Length: 392
Image (cartoon, rainbow, N blue to C red; front, side):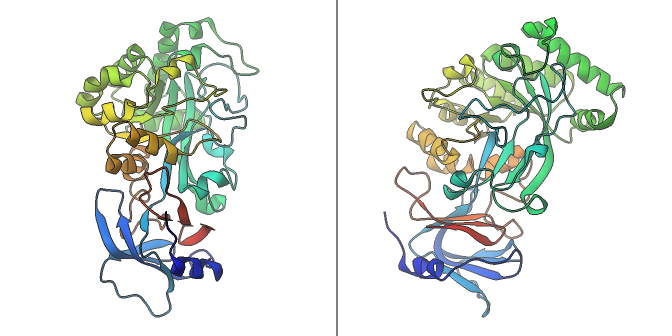
């Protein structure tokens, strides 16, 4: 492990900018773009909170603030592709407060849980954005959002409505959300499918109004995907059938049993958000999730399934550690990096702004003192919208 003195000098001088007001040049680092490219000795030029240019021979404006990253690695900020941030509680068992009655609440919005400084420890570990998931105990639980972990609501909410969330299996059938009576249809898998299909049929007939009808209309039009939390292989197969019946874009969440149906997922082109791969003592979540193994990400990747990594938590271990664990159990390091940068951003529907070090993308960047997919590496600086928000 090493520290570069030039970075230390720049940071000690109070290196931070007002939003969009300065030009920043990160000079001399080994830039991993997040999309497979590695640019040694490159410069990342940031203007107005966005990446203006990336390359080895860039001319740096005379008025630019210089951050020397020589001997270090520069990457996009990491994304956690499934969290319960803002829901309260402990690692793995967070659940949002009750929003109403019944197992179907398509009008619920995870974006309403946004608050500043959602996960400062995650931010310091290089995670700059996260997916806020709706209540995982609902058969159909409204829309999820992508937010940054620094900034105000005006700057940090990337997209308030990136997916409609649903749950099959133990997550939805085993618990009863506080203040809600569980209908008998919700006590079996057949009942859950009945609830989901009836709601989608009603939405297709335009008999659901308001925010719920709008969200489901976007889902049926293919504008946003269905994020289906499913762990048992047969529940994943059910999700595939429902998605095919209604011609839905599908993303499978958690997916402990996905390795058993990896070829089916690859053939159908269905991405999977994997995680958490290892649960600790006291971690919550459904028992089905305990079927996860650290090799799951590698097995899916080898089968040709596009993956992102997640913690499914509101605190505790950063998704950076999920990438380290996946790489230690067979996932190539470049694929592990993509699973928390470019592939994660694409699966989340924000791949036009986040997840890559490329011209026009948001300047959410991390300077590391070594390759980021390593137990020994630490963040040296974390930058969101062109501002240094953490420095070591």
